[in-house]
Amino acid sequence: MLRKLFLSAAVAFLLTPALLAQTVDEIIAKNIEARGGLDKIKAVQSMRSSGKMEFGPGMEAPGVMIQKRPSYVRLDFTVQGLTATQAYDGKSGWAIMPFTGKKDPEAMSADDTKDFEDEADLDGPLVDYKSKGHQVELLGKEKVEGTDAYKVKLTRKNGDVDIIYVDADSFLEIKEEQTRTIRGTERESETTLGDYREVNGLMFPFAVASSIKGSPQQQKLTIEKIELNLPLDDASFKMPAAAPVLADKPDAAKPADKPKN
Image (tube, rainbow, N blue to C red; front, side, top):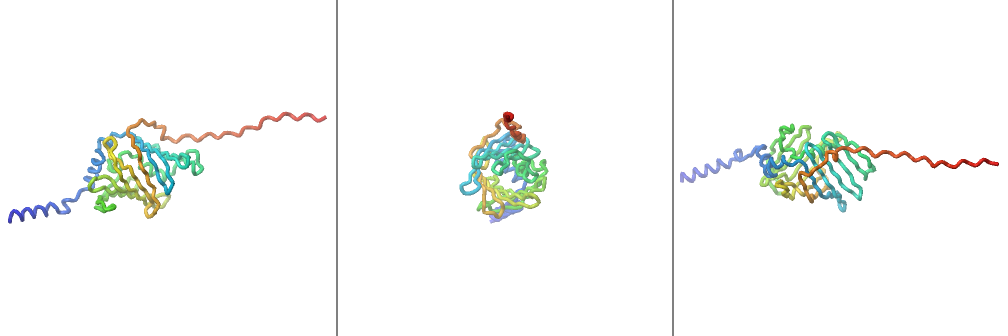
């Protein structure tokens, strides 16, 4: 009887929630390990992701995103035969949006550049978050479509806030909520991540769905191929010069009028 009571007490002690609780740094460490480990993450110098974006019924846009250390990113996508480009060169963003009538490259506003600054971080915001100036906080556990997930609040150096949901079993990210201030207005968006596949020993989501919080309209991204450590020219991320404006050609010289008799 004494042995049973001792065993029962030991089990109750070990199952105390306070002792079972994991710290946010432990969860981040397991997330990094689940993705493939810090060494493999750091070994990625460049990445090329090919796939298609769905903006609505019947609206698909094939696209390619390239990323390179230290903080370069470029997205090219085609809509109705017109190819648009959005890029970040580590300091500023620029875009060419021909289907809006803008065929020459133009600088992005600081607000519009924010998302590209985030994408330029090849490691992801949780890796080395302290040295990047970010802060993290564990907000507990929550169900995400029936799956238990740790809810990690990331406050970026610039004040933007991400809520990152880490699967309690796989320790991979399955959902993110972003709060951004765009032109003085706070914007909240949601992103779900799924269909994880291994590429060179690293785990990547091949299915991504995003929407403005509260909106039924959703944008879906289906990744078809991810290539790592390709040689990418830095010049690909720099804003090109605008096409020169051709001057109107002067009319051909007219023959002199014959003098009247």
